[in-house]
Image 1 (cartoon, protein in one colour):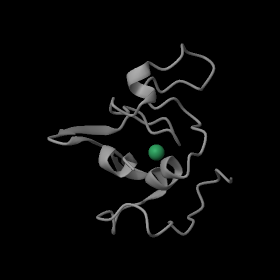
Image 2: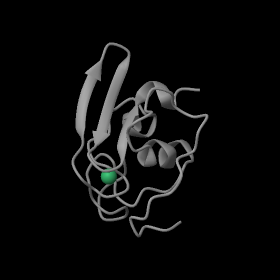
Image 3: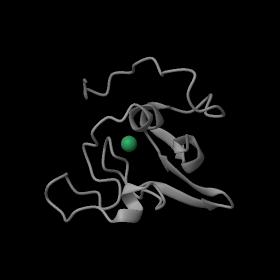
Image 4: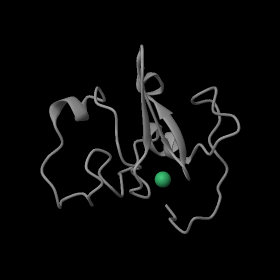
Length: 98
Ligand SMILES: [Zn+2]
């Protein structure tokens, strides 16, 4: 995986409704890529405590982009949550439900 900021083609066939936004974050999460930053604390993995069980289960909205560590805009939705990084796009809890 390259983290140079170069654009890469987003994976299609995943979340729908994110057509004109960057999909890098959603693609990384859906692909199960190891986060470069903790989505709940913004810390580098290994520097903080273990994630809460709720966070691990995806019940808790992430507050930080796992790719760049930026604080994300989090919206609580009737069916879950939506979090958006200004650079890497949005992710919604329902996209993570299988
Ligand atoms: Zn980001």
